Length: 356
Image (tube, rainbow, N blue to C red; front, side):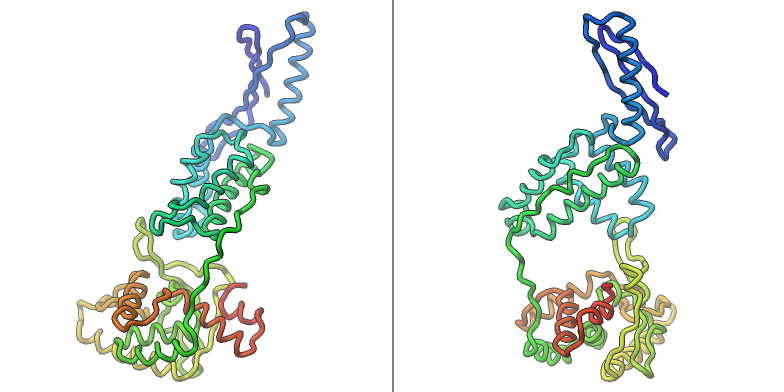
């Protein structure tokens, strides 16, 4: 239903477009100034025509209120992201807002153009944008920024606030492709030799990581009941993650397809059995001070391990032994290369890694 208000020589038309999830009414407004040579009857007729056209535009989501991108994005976080995204994803999206808000947060949704978004994405290619390295952001990070903006705009379209997503016409600059570093076969053999000097917990962690290709969160989510010690089959069905807001918490796997079974060599099972024996002895030793858990990889007293702990330990271990440090995720890529090198087809490899 539309209403008309005369304001000097102009007329403001207001149309109700329903209600938001918080119960607030959504209205759209437009102002029209008729030709001064029109008669009152002609003005009335023209206003009725404009009302019909404006109502039609509102019904098809072709008009938005003067809401700015930052304000609408905050609504998106409350109405959609909090309810539908994993905590880790929600946290990552929050981290993207600082640059996005500074660049386009002040622009109204109906005035946000492809060019404005393109200018923002292009700005990420400048030296110094990455405060840690002094270099431009990686192309992958630029894609994350564009995807975030696009997701918010798609939600506005779904809410019938706008009809077009300008992100679809944005081009991601090519940039320099970051070389993915992983251990060679020779380096992997050397790593296993060095690992024999490490605590049994980390021998088990990194040996299993290399032979299974699991994500770090999946490794930390493993429980002893997930392992069939007779066959070497491991059931991957949960993750352990960390955010500042929630601390360490248990979650589902990254996707439904990430719930899977992987088989590891029996030599790995033997390492796990030795580690389980050590953990059981530690449980008895600490008695009431032990935090009861079925998790494989925990702190000294049984509490869940922080996801950053294996990373920090490996970095220190590599530095101590003058060995190349490429992070933990590289072991997943190493496992991929080993599978492909063994002649396993890419589709099967994707399934093993839980990517399909």
